[in-house]
Image (cartoon, rainbow, N blue to C red):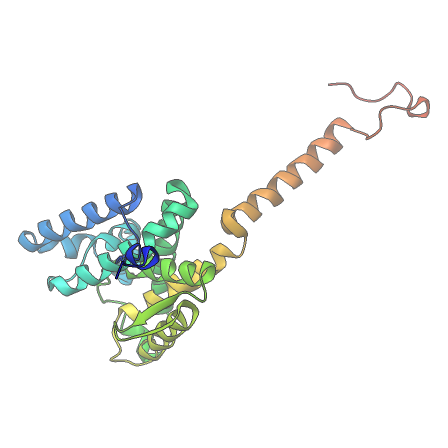
Length: 250
């Protein structure tokens, strides 16, 4: 009995496909830094994000460098890099490399800033993070997860690699877990950073593909044009006879 040509063309694949330039570079950078940190443990002390260091010693570079550091246990970096590959590749294809990198670092740095600000609040759960070391790309990765759910809300994702749920439900569950951990004194340092990544990612995307920075640029250019119009006395529709010849000419 001949095979059905329709059935013979069915294929299955895992993951989003070939690596994109930014995702590849981030994977290499995180992997190299992880291997170096195994031999030079001081790397985490120097470049991990400690809110107290940022506040008292102005070590603002930690808001960037903490994203490339991971715990010595390989599961931390493996899961993070798996998320970067699974969700980052498709987003970079859609956004292109420049916007993808802008979004990645904005959410990662923004999550770090929120972690520092939250550590200053007068609560037991927040004070515990003030002198703690925060490492990992999770802040930026939670931003990518939020963006993925924003653009593909109904796309199924395997929750805990067991059962499929829509992307919007998947991210909502992760956000709820992070919130519960954040209000728990023993919930872990990174929970606030996870929530920060979700929040910054959401705010960034509200302005469309250009993000909230596009809205700021638009408002600034509009103000600048109005200012120039007043300065040079520009009138739409040309100059009428009533306008006279005493206008300033530039």
